[in-house]
Image (cartoon, rainbow over all chains, first blue to last red; front, side, top):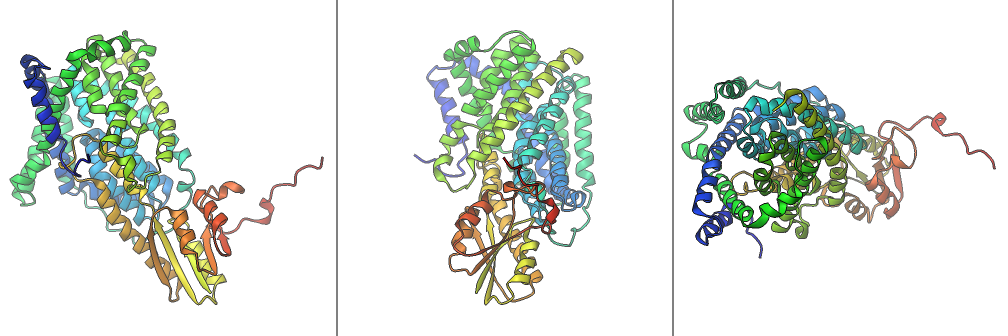
Length: 398
Length: 162
């Protein structure tokens, strides 16, 4: 059976959640507790999606392309450096969805216009959308879930993750420079026109900066930082509505309601699976303690699980098991589930089978090359990040 | 004589210059660019890895395919202007090395540039695609250096006699 292209996964996940509740595979109390825990996460997620969408409407990503083109001047290595810098910041602040959906086409167009081979730069976007999503709770849905479970404040989360984030990106950069040395060695003039000077999307930049400041202030004041994201999203969406660049329908669509429903439903289904024996099975495999070997073991287990079943179910399964050990274990799970997916095309074997990507052959991706790059980049980034996390835990504490 | 000039981002001007210099008597010059669908496929893979987003957010693959078509057309237009004579533009999509060999089926000459690591002279100055094309081309091949040919002094010393 082939899943019709483009059909939301929620169409399957929501009835599945209904079935596990109806058949008693999960008690009504547990289902309600899961939904109550996921509710604020889903709201936070919706706000970040809206924020990124209207940053695009304000021209932020277009301006990114112009900056990259001007700064690199058609030199492939400089362009790669610019892509690494921008993709890392955009993933961290506006989430990995923004990098995959909004930044990748801009990077591809910039490379083509600059007369530079696009492959290393597009690869950089796909890898960094995972690796650079370690920094903030908003960077990745997995982080939002872990953030809710860890009991850490927004700023402490960021303080513990900044070093692993930098180390992982640095490791990726070194691997990329070596792996794509041939593609990065040739440059020819693209169009002579350097393009119009980028118009600075001041409003979007100020709103995003204020939102980030709001995260810190909310966290210090004991308020849920989701409200800061909500405020930022409302400001940008409100401006677009006033300027007639958006309608209420496009604002709701930007929040991706089917995706939000999917997250809630998946949470309930996974909770049912965990309740019915998976917790006992994995609890024996998951190492206890907070030493460096333990953190490494947790991160590797999380990475392996993410490559088998996709990182979203993986983090939902592992969080309840890691949370009692403390924030260190939770963050180690995040390192695994966020960096790990770079090893498998489409992020996991389950996605490959589910979407029948391997059988289609119509995407033309060199899976050997993809996997060779992953086998170099993932262990380097993951091991470096775990050591950095261990160091940060010693210095910053939990 | 039909001359095929295989153009790749980064190295194409040297190929056009070589065609202009060495194939003046060509009856037809064909400027060939092959688009790799794999790059857009990478974006598709990244999107597919984002579980639950199908239908809610646009798959970036389609946008990349559109952009790829535009940039190939621009490259061929720039190459035609540099060539300065009437020519045929040929855009293909697929496995690059196989498309090039297939396009050279009835050619009298194929012009291509080294696509490997040119910082050290040797076998690695040919990348995978150019290596395949050189090995399987059904016609004579004119292989050019994109940055100008190296000096004779760059030749390594002969091996010591046994």
